[in-house]
Length: 215
Image (tube, rainbow, N blue to C red):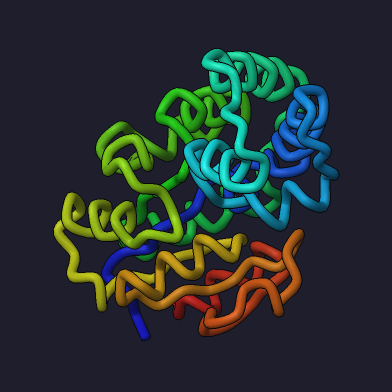
């Protein structure tokens, strides 16, 4: 099927940020008295917005995270991004293929607009994503697995949900895409297929994606 819009997740799909951010999140939660391993962070928080961290910690411990939790975590993540962040290998080649085929695309991320922009500037992806094709959970209030973000992106891009395909690497993202009535392909470079149940197909290298999208 030839789609009218390709919606990319950002972290782990366009920028190789998941190892950095989940390592830092696990460390910070543990530091605050909520023991969390890197694997725990990937399982529970990968693909979700920050409110999910607050909600799960409160649900499990009965304790609220400090008021400055988000700002402190953000500062740590941005410092790591500026030092270490790289684009996902092959991501720019996929974007070039979409431009050449005149297929519209956008990014819809659980991360903040600031986080998206910091990562894109560091990796050179900023030239591929003008403001009008960048969407964040900040725009809708509820992050993945709610469908709101993907539906918002499709509406702003003027494309019906059924004509969109989502590229995701998290369980929460796949659930959100399916709830939005969109096709979704699972990127398995970090996440095994069984964690992306419901995706219409899987790929482990970005160079496989153009053929999957019928380009």
